[in-house]
Length: 198
Image 1: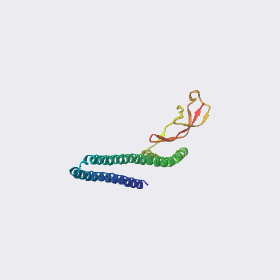
Image 2 (image 1 turned 90 degrees about the vertical axis):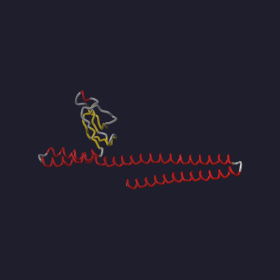
Image 3 (image 1 turned 45 degrees about the horizontal axis):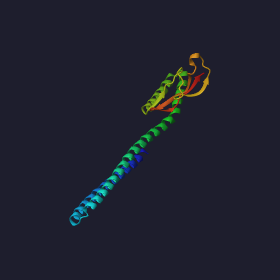
Image 4 (image 1 turned 120 degrees about the vertical axis):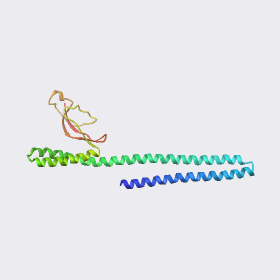
């Protein structure tokens, strides 16, 4: 999909470049022709001054056309590079969001396997879990470390329920973390679900 977009963008850039080059060539040809006519007209008549002014106006119009076309091209380049960046971010975010339930299942599986006495099974699952998490980390996924006793912040936490605080110092703070939150770069793609004390 990205190769098609790259080819399309390159084709459009090439088309705009061709238009700019054509406009420049036309302007140069018009100026050269008008200079020849102007030299001939000055020799033959007294109307050389007005013709020179007309030619200057034409050159100015072509120059304006060229500048507008060039500005359009620069805006186009800026816009397409921004769109391309957004596309990559969005595509990556969708894949990462789809992987979060798998990470949750790994956490649950590890908790259950730790209860058994099969150390080889635990070690094998931990290896796979670590490799999977490391791969996602290399792609920009970071877990949000939220612990019990932290102050609840509505901007970065999602409170799913509120219970009476087990102790006085846990009032208005996080009592339990139900689901871990994750960031992709600087953007939070899943807020941590927490239980707060009242």
